[in-house]
Image (cartoon, rainbow, N blue to C red; front, side, top):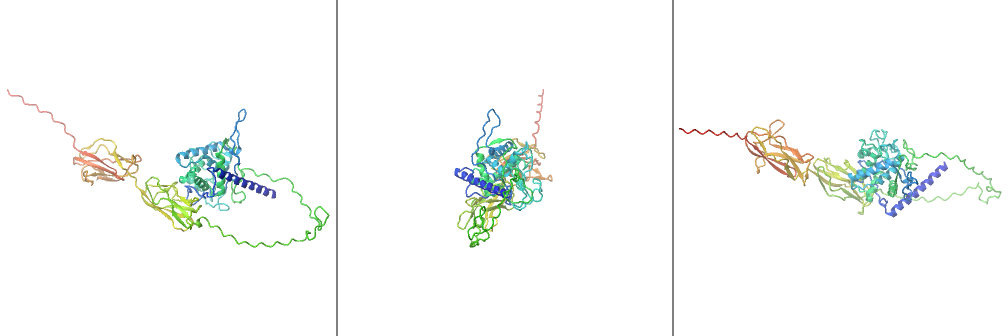
Length: 590
């Protein structure tokens, strides 16, 4: 047993030394993935946020593989003489299907989230520490793992406690959740960020294409720019809230950026060390990816026989006086107990106040994204920003407006300057006011409140579709319906409210009591229609119109929210009678 323990100690020491050297090398080179002392202990999901309001990370802070890349930069593969498969550093080899999934995910978010600047090497780095690149690329042709990859049971014993959220659909556990698949999503996170990366109509966390695209969207959440060091660190920490995890992922990210190559599926290098190896955990978790070596068969060394009193081992000379084995050594004087150090206050305990660091108020049109961002700064008693403080942003009030990703409440961790910025807010269709509140989690400090308003969609121009004259005989039905198109700032205005009225005159906008009319549900004449709304192309088709027995020229006026107005002329007239045939002139009398 002593030999095994010694082996573990030596391996841990080497790993620690490699980690320190790798991080130092990154910092010295000022690489984009270099660590600093103010890396954010953040959560995602929805900008430095998680997708759910309860504060869980993507993996539920499940264990991960702690192996570090070689300090030496990867050597690109070189061709074998006479042909054959090219060879390069084995650690830089990525299984073909897994590599393809990472690159396709990068291309997809480059279109959907162009400001994110997600490198596929970041997905590879996370995939390395989470599952060893899907256990060395053990996936089928569609990208689904050949066997499930499950994290330990998250029952609170050695890990986070997360009760079941998927009824065992993904992890097979109906009591607690477990991280699932090659990117190790917990089911509740996957429910918010699931994607179909291979276009098969399914969203499966066990499929590397689906999981990689879901991870890409998760890391880009909240408008993050991963070319920015703080946003990059926040994204990684949102996956697993651990500084050691951050440093490990950054090490692999920098390594993969220097060069990789493709290897066949199932032949990728498997990691050795996991972050939970020395921590007992109940329940079933994934076994180590490498088999445990059998115990040594070398016989134990024989211990020397105890020597006789008065003799030294291996000789006949007597011991020095006062040093015989039977003489007990006087006890050392007990050290004076040191007073315990007072515990260092947590980041939230250091906060004296929360200040507004973003927009003072917000306004957006229904269906649009708010241009302003809500932000709050956590300050200590000296007015300095406090990093790593969890700030919860909540949308309060009767509104269907939500943060990006559909959450009504998100938690964001402050940056090194003490500032937390909420993800973008997407206005719903319900107009009116509401409030966005920011408060420090687990503290009763005064919250920051930002008023917000959703205004109705507007149009600034109306035009009629078609120019055919609208004429009808008294007591008949108009042959054509009126159709108009609404525009706002030169573009089609969808969902704009409008009102149509048969007005008395160009100067009098009150409803007429005679002339053309619409029919109500009861079949009676109606000369004002409210609650109309343009379609997705900005068009509005009015109902059929009818004429009473009063001939004349009448006006139909259409007005939209925003003030766009159009007046259409309607005529009620009897058809022209046929001209009479000329009367024959009388014959002259003789």
